[in-house]
Length: 608
Image (cartoon, rainbow, N blue to C red; front, side, top):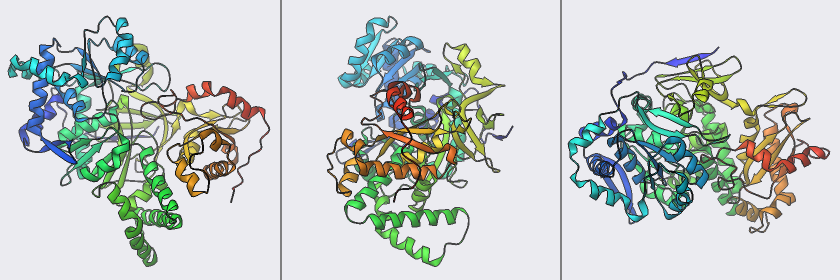
């Protein structure tokens, strides 16, 4: 059994709770800009002192409204400054937040509110309220629904004016490290979501140790980040808490359609994103270059960037000719992409899925070090992460301080340490099943190199065993195919079947530009595009490239391009954009049957 365990850097404080991180920050650097909020064409800073003052005022409002220490309060909202304001106001009031994804259906909202025992709920919009209203009659414990769009924050703040500061300070200090800090429900790629009990120590100890491990990222001069992935997910939630502890200026942009202008005006020093964001940046730049007749230049620049980065990572000397090409492309291509991201981005933390070595090396040559990490809701986000001074592209890095990671006999990743959750709420059976000798069983498969850098190889439950007995990890084929600009999502099939196949969807955002660049109508429908010969050839090329990374027995022999998109709204993706494989297998059973009923016509012979 392979095991790597890194001792904690910061001594544990069992009495500390998450609110202490803000209280200490406000006391140490009261004038430091902790947040920036949109104002006109720019941003208005909010100091640590002013943020804590607003938190205390809102906490008083919750107290005045009857919220008691330990009460569960649901929350549905997009990624904004107010999200963290409410989060810490509940901490200061001694309550427990139960975040709910803003895209959740009425039945999902009902399940989470009912299972958690939440007695109040804050929603952001009329749409959120309408969904709650559908099921409110089935939630007898729900006493109050506050609506942010109707001024709930100001109303609560006014109601709490008579509450003494001493009462908030008393409540703030009630919780100790082992107490529940929040109840986060898994995104439910299989079955009903389970409530993960994350403790105050999970957030406090992980924040304090991660800040030391990621010192170069969070303490660089003017350290700042612009959050755009949902704060209801533990990944962004943890970064929000870490930012308060480390004194990182944080902005928010919930609408990714406005992300580029926001990056340009906010100018963050590091980003938090999922691989799909980096794929979109790369593919958009490639298609834009293609449209301007500079596609060959972009591809040449990308090849130079990857080669340059690989040599640097291997510690080898970069030849003069490559250095000259790199300097040229830095002016023509790389510099423009850096400016598109605000011009100051030095690091990007990436999680939730593998990024791929090509994109990792490409962005590295842009001057953006992508620090891939790995974790789950049950590990309070990160368990491993590449560090600024200790990074290997293609891996998810070494274990964080205070965390142990090992591989079981069959290669499953198991985790223990300061970040691992306490239990599943009201579900002792699932809790017992999730642990093995005190180690959390992640369900993911992985491998270590000799330095303790972890590589994710797939999901244990998703391993395909063909009729011929060949074990195939779908992610190894899906990730490189999905990196193609016109591909939306991929699901590799073949369990107990004679060969491997795939269902593929097209990316409706990227497709029009690709069609125009290839002399086809840019307004072609998904149905027509899925049957178009040129589109199919492009997808075949992506499949061929993926097939080169595996053996013949593991390669994709057939694929079907579906005339639809898989989205969260369609029920085929989780809020963090993970595939709901079981739902797709059920909903597209007919198409899968057709793949295996017809003779194999496509091969892995490269086209063009």
